[in-house]
Length: 322
Image (cartoon, rainbow, N blue to C red):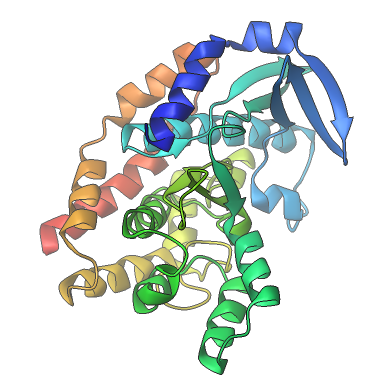
């Protein structure tokens, strides 16, 4: 049985919902993090927020903006979980709880006991410390440890990644970056990528998706900025390096999509990933968001949905031009 099937089998066996997890589980604090113990199962607890909010780089932060950002970030996490699952990814499950106006998310660790797993950053750090590499590979490791996920970089250094991940895992890693790109995800770093493998496997076989609460638009929406102005910001001004990079640091989204088109035209992004983008274009975001709202009793902002549709439109435009 593959990792995804074992993961889903374990998740289904608990028959969890938000009510039973939050009411029957034991809430505790460990290493400055909150956990819920549900028998032998442990769930991580967080208060969702956008990266921009966490960095607190804007003086407009106030109580209303904080609540709005929390609601938007919660919605993004739930939307992303359903979206990535629909596209065939192994994805974290989330159980929301609203207290004093804020949403909290509990995410059970169904990976434990199912497979071996590690964040990409920890794996690279371990390889950097324990292996004696030639200069070229040392430079590759250093670059990976000090950069965001970069599509061109990963494509150019395929053999480096295939040392520790299977071809299927490598393809899934690229697919993850493409979907993150079209959803305007902006907290993409190697600590937010989990690689998984079966106990006796020599290489990592799958990518686990989690921590997708932050986008390039959520906090601006929380401040009440218009769709038009946020779109102008995304496509005109250079984005910070925590975004998915397509080629170089500080790209705006207009540049990102143009370079992605060039990579496709040069054949560096092949049919499998083109088919993924086409599949993404055909996602019914209205239905997906309706399901998120009804299943989690959360009200979604129409303008937030409009941004997911904007990314989808960009993907469709790209496919029409190749």
